[in-house]
Image (cartoon, rainbow, N blue to C red; front, side, top):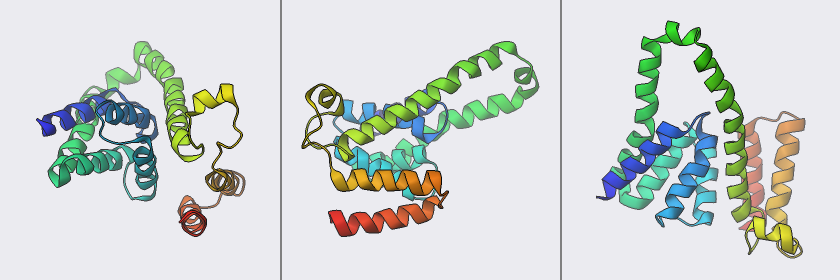
Length: 189
């Protein structure tokens, strides 16, 4: 039963998420929190590990959740579940590529899906921010009660430094991860 549950949840995530791994993160978070598979802090760890390990974020996240829930067989089942829809869809798209290229309906649908992808990436950022950058209450509650005493200073400083190093100075994401990992180990460990 555990394996059917893992496969079904990750199959749905793989089938109904567009735009890569980051937009899948809110669906993964919702799925794992609804079934009590991990806390918001565990999810923040999942996002961090998915970012710094080789491979697609969604596959890494599915593997992580599956492993935590049911060991190596769970990791295999969850990973298969999240990958199978994309594999099937790509096989169908390749078969009918010429028809899809000129379809106004498909182009219109993709025009509607692109902004959704940006919104889902933003939602993933909000989920992670709740457990990493802010202490105590949920971020949405703090909008009304104020932030005094609720901000985690070091993680916020690491966040801002990452934006500056990666965004402004175009530093390699690998180097940024190493620098900020060492900084976190020294200041938060």
